[in-house]
Image 1: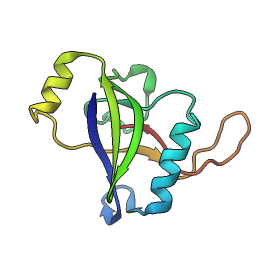
Image 2: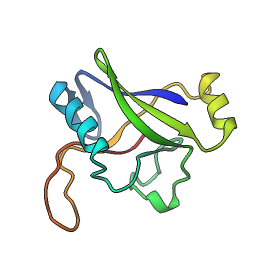
Image 3: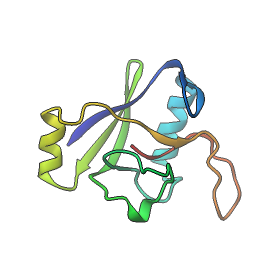
Image 4: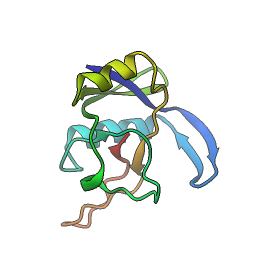
Length: 123
């Protein structure tokens, strides 16, 4: 089982997305919406971002699947099961050291149109 930090409390500036902030309310929404399966599938972990910045789930190879989200102090962690022992070894050996959450602060359900707030889709 992998334990991957993917979000922390604080506020910072991103060159493409502007101001990004994490607070306890956002953390609680990440966890609740994950446990309620709002996305309809588990978030997956992939290596890198697609070049066109699109979230193309069908074309992105899942290197791990998120089984749970837990908070420790000011950090959210994904507990994930690797799809291949090699990727788990690469992460443990620090070949990959940083994670970037792919999420929506206003995730709308496609059927009901309901806004669920912050939902994690990938890391």
